[in-house]
Image 1 (cartoon, rainbow, N blue to C red):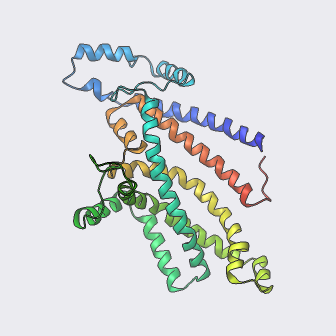
Image 2 (tube, helix red, strand yellow):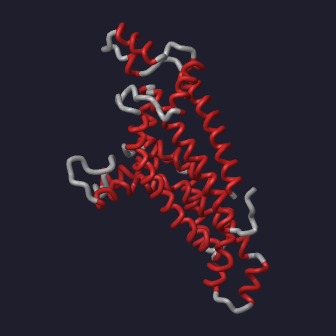
Image 3 (cartoon, rainbow, N blue to C red):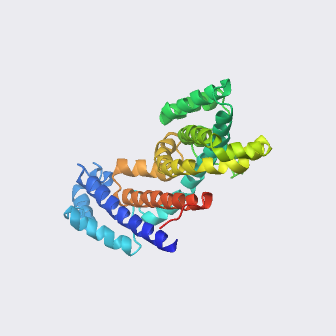
Length: 315
């Protein structure tokens, strides 16, 4: 097991190296430059000196080698826009994104698994058809459209929920206020993974319920709940875990749009702002961090296989 984990971590490091090279080349080769240096109010001579001091006139391979050397020494650079170390900037945004993405993922799993099981048990019923239509709706609907519609209904017309931010400006912190701000972004972000998981859970459960060991368990007189929970659900969850590992990167990608819509102060909003202002150190920092999260989620998915199915051996 330890050898397998070490091998996967080494592959992850190589993947991060390739991703950083590609993103660095694309970002620095794009026309224009940091918005701070292109500001018409900034003295051209001062901007040129600052650009030379940052090394932006050097060839891209030289800039990348310098950036990589600093990263290996634990230095992600200093944000052009915010004027603080990138690591400090990211550290302040990570908890907010983890809170939003984690809530959305938990919400998706808690709703999708029971929905998929019920849909499989009562397949071809009115409940199954309703769940299927809801799942297709969740897969097809654009995140930004759903977010805007929720804001119009629950913030503009009903006034029940705040439309932006993480807490009410000027008010003392309270968990109730945080939950009110968190509810709509979490629902929007969970829509796609919830629909996907529900469909995979239904398909997996239908397949498992047709297996001989499930019929044997029923023939022994076990109750339907015991058959479903003790014999069918665990095996049906194995393919769902595979989908879950794929959905985590999608969840992080969706957080970029969701955080921009709801002005949620997380990594996604920081990535959008940094891309607009060409804040190179922050763009690269977010890229490394998100790529690392994806690599780690895939590794945890493989380890979850072993926990769910003892027949699987990792080598």
